Image (cartoon, rainbow, N blue to C red; front, side):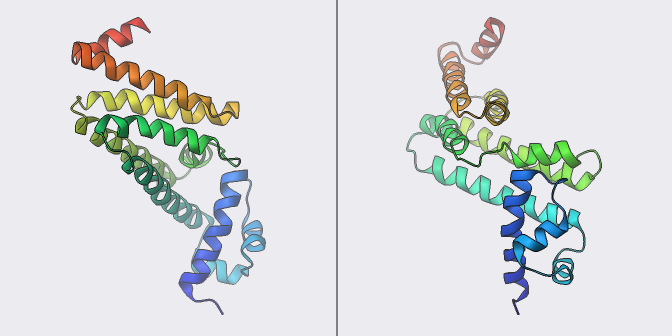
Length: 199
């Protein structure tokens, strides 16, 4: 018999693929049982409710996603390269054959109105991503306000790529990020206002 951690890992591995590919509401515990090979009794010992399983799925996804991004960006040398590398990584992610958008946006859309904890997980993930962008931006010597614009570019690209089924929105967001950075370098903080006014 599998130990607690092994069984939990087995259930979560099966759940990740199901929830991300099909959506949370469309996947019942019977599908999780079949995919994981664990009996219902064992599943409910590990996760007393489907919501508990969803929350653990999101917690795990958050850690994996942010670590993958940080590992990729950390391989670049200069602060400017690290900012732009965020969009390069997004392109790499969007190019994966099973890309279905952001699991947190998807889960919020499905369950945010009925589960405060799912909504909080989604907010936590987005706030952490924004905080990461802010750290990259300030390390490049630019004002933290730029991170607000870059976060919107990234989030828009994530949604557009999922709907279009193409990775190109990452390059479009990357080009816009470079324009914003250049505007700041030429004009200081007012460069952001000028760039917004011209769009």
